[in-house]
Structure formats: C-alpha cells, structure tokens
Amino acid sequence: MAGQGRADPRPLSPHLQIWKWHWTMAGSIFHRVSGVGLYGGAFLIGAWLIALATGPEAYAFVEAIVFSLPGQIVLFLWSMAVLYHFANGLRHLIWDGPMIGFSPGVASLWSMFNFAFAIIGAAVIWSLASFY
Amino acid sequence: MTTSAKSVRGLGSAGTGTQHHIRQRVTALALLFLVPWFLYSIIHACKAGYEGALTWAAQPLNAILLILTLSAALYHMRLGMQVVIEDYIAKSGTRQALLILNTFAVIALAAATILSVLKIWFTAGA
Image (cartoon, rainbow over all chains, first blue to last red; front, side):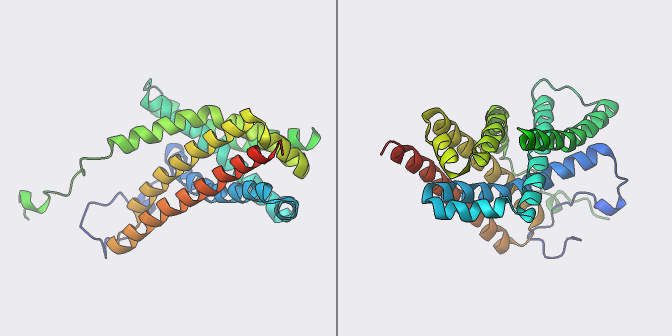
C-alpha cells in the first residue's frame, strides 16, 4: 500500500485510514465492492444457465444449491448488490449526463437513498417473490 | 527539495481512457433497461422449476433479451474489473497476468452462456 513494489512511482490516492467516513465516500466504495461482487455473481448465474441448457440432472443439482440456506443468503446479498449498483450507477449517469446532484447536501442524501433503496428494495422483492 | 520537471514527466494521465469511460457508460445505459427485465424474469423462471425455466428461456423475445443482457453485463464487468486491477495491483507482471485473465474469463463465460441460450432456443421445438 505504501508504494513498495510499484512499477512506477505514480502518486497514490489518500489512504483510507486518514479520511473521516462520510456518505458519498461510503457510496463510492460500495459501488466498487458491489461491482466486484456482481462479477462473481455473473459466474453463478452463468452456471445456472449452463445447467439449464445441459439437462434436468445438472439443473436439479444447481437448483438444490440455489434453494439451500447458503444459496439463499448469497442470492439475497446478490440482489442487494444489484439494486445498489443499479441505483448508484444511475446516479453516475446523471452526474455524467445532465450533471446534477453535485452539491454536498444533495450528494450525501442521494448516497443514503441508494443504500436504503438496496436494502428495502431487496426486502420488498424477496417478500413479493415468496408470496407470489 | 527538487522541483525538476523530469521527475514528474510521464507520470501523469496516460492520455487514453476516454473510450473506456464511454463504453462503461453506454453498457450501463443498456443495463438500465435490461436489468429490471432480468430481475423480474429470473424470479419467475427460478420458481417455475426445470420445465418452466426452459419454456421461459426458449421464447424468442426472452432468448434475445437474455443474450443482450449477458453481452452488456459481461462487457461492463470486464471494463470495471480492469480498472480495479489497474488500481490495486502494482506489480507489473501480476497486473498484466490478471488483466489477461479478466478478459479470458469474461469471454469464456460469454461464449458458454450465449451458447447455452442458443441451445435452449434451437432445441425447444425439437
């Protein structure tokens, strides 16, 4: 982290430890964290799709994992990551396109909203999916 | 204290990246529409069991949207992971290896999943 072993001595971004946490910073970090999580999730969805194309035995094997407790936990985390990355990604597009929402107050509120959207949205989708 | 220009020359922006940035946004724009469809569909497909999921994936519109979702999402995530690797992996050899692995892994996943959709589609009527 401190620059040892760098290929070239480019400047480093400020170290996390010396920054006071605030909403927009958390929002940015979790955008990346959720993105990396979804990268892994894409391979799991891929496995589901490949199993579906392979046949009933392969599908039953994957289905058993998906509906097991660890599978459901991973799926719930995945759904939160999708909703968070979606909401915060939309915010990035609004920053880049119409270029609105940059003032500190609005930006912080928007970050809070995105976290709330991910948690509440996942809960709503899961309850709808289980009752339907 | 030295302020010689030669110590900083060549350490600034690489001068490339605009295309990467634009592609990231364009795939994001596509996913803005495809992801809500995908979430809605995957829940129904998952709950319908093997036969139900197969019927769902075999419908032309679903197969087309699945391939579009896969293409946009996989391209988007390759670009994203590339930036993560470039940001955190300092060692040149490891960095190059991971960047190549990222590309290979995503293309392999794209090939396997898109072929799966096509297989389901083509064998549905048979």
